[in-house]
Amino acid sequence: MAVEGGLGAPVRHAIDWNDPDFFDEEKLDAELRRVFDICHGCRRCFNLCDSFPRLFDLIDESKTGELDSVSSDDFKPVVDACTLCDMCFMTKCPYVPPHEFNLDFPHLMLRYRAVELKKGEVGFAESQLTETDRNGKLAGAVAPVANWASKTGNGLTRPVLQAVAGVDARVDLPKFHGKTFTARAKTDKPAINAEAPAHGRKAILFATCFVNYNNPGIGEAALAVLAKNGVETEVGYPGCCGMPQLEHGDLARVAENARRTAAYFGPWIDKGYDVVALTPSCALMLKFEWPLIVPKDDPAYDAVVKLSKATRDISEYVVDIADKEGLAPGMQPVDGGITLHLACHARAQNLGPKAADMLKRIPGSDVSVIERCSGHGGSWGILKDNFDTALKVGKPVARKALEEGKAYVASECPLAAKHVVQGMKMLDGANVKVEAPSHPIEIFARAYGIGAAGTDKK
Image: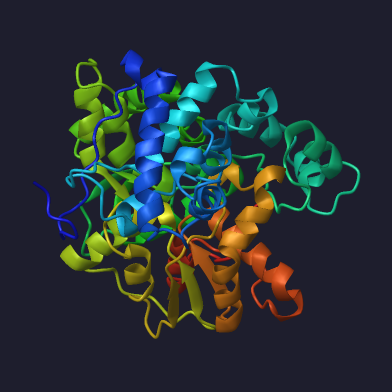
């Protein structure tokens, strides 16, 4: 029997979405009630996201003050507030496996959404927002027009976008670029430093949809840093990892993406290349979610597991170079200090604060770390129904970043960084020193004099 409060690592079970019982609504309701009752009695997660306050208020304000007087029809707001950040599972809940209570709150919310999807209850416009590859290609082809139309404060187009697609008119949306990161990497690859201690390493960057279409500068900074450190680096992008579809419970689509991506990277892994993901959400998918979603009897399962074992987050990879071979010399201090937000999906990888460790390798570095959810939650946080909640959850992060007053605000999650900076400006725009958020690898490149942190390259 598991020991309550034990220090063992959490264990996640496979998501058996091919079992008909997974979509059985009566069995789902029974599991929701079992888990919600335990959560209501524990309440350790009250300050993580809005799901738990909604759940506790729902039960506390019921006729009996217990779950027995709560209608199952009232569960949906609790589910809708979950961003699948995994922080309750990874950092708070004492009842995750191997405990006998066997709680996995995020994956239970995922199951609820999978049932909703099967019943056709996911709106058309909302589902179209998750088509990141199609949207990125279309918007990139007309990038100046797309960026004008999506600009915050555009009174002509943003109200229409809110009415049609449900995207809150106040959200600071990412820009699109006419030339993707993969296209840039074909013509602008930096020379490899043969004198670097880590010369001989080989890596292939998983471009990710966000970096490829919305912020190629992150990828260019990663290429430059790895080349400076002697790493022979390629760039690959077989398509989105499926995190946007995961948020809506489309597990079949995620499994399809996993099979395709594992087949793409398999030959590179066989040639000795490490796979390096540029955003933590994508690294989390490749490392942890895909092996739980692709069934073990699937012909692609072994390839998915091989990819999982070969994948590293970009900060994790740079720190590994620093620890094993040593970094190439030549870094200079970065003036003004750095406020670093530790992204939830980086924390959920259970590898430690690698972005902070990486930035602290910069000579004379002044790094302040904020280890709390930004509130954004990917495509969840941009919706009109969620944006106010996203701001509320992220307000402590924005307030702390304001207090720090440093020149750079960074997060491995680019959307989280953008959300934090927007929150800072909403709190006290006159005292926000930082103009744009940064990815830690961009700041690291700046320390080497090979990148401009905090800017979007055109």
